[in-house]
Image 1 (cartoon, rainbow, N blue to C red):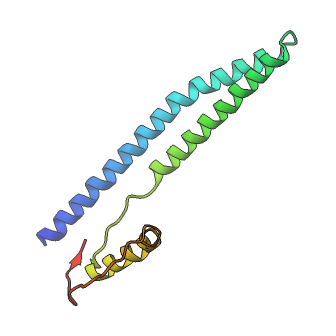
Image 2 (tube, rainbow, N blue to C red):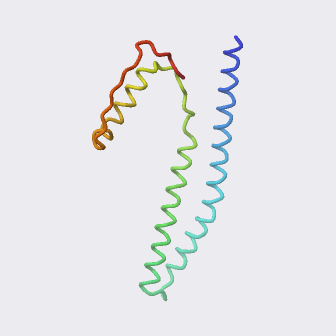
Image 3 (cartoon, rainbow, N blue to C red):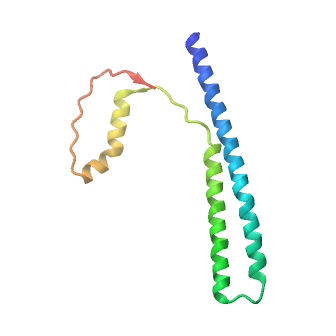
Length: 127
């Protein structure tokens, strides 16, 4: 009973931390996006003026592209922070080791590394 209570408490703390991180991410994004919008609007106004040369308009176009890149990064950042927390599960240690070696095998082959594995039959489960 105590173990379940501790697990529930850890889960609540973890979810609370993720919620706080999501809120912080939203606040940061808002604080960055507002000046970007102001800059973008100013660039549009300036670029609509006819007395600008070709080089100046190209520079303003680059600024607009970079503003869009920053907005894209902000969107990705928000997406990342909105994702659910990683849930761990118990796995059999032999399976985990074999899966890791399978995934790393192309690297081992490229580096000409040979792996010999001798695992006990009944290694414990791990979280």
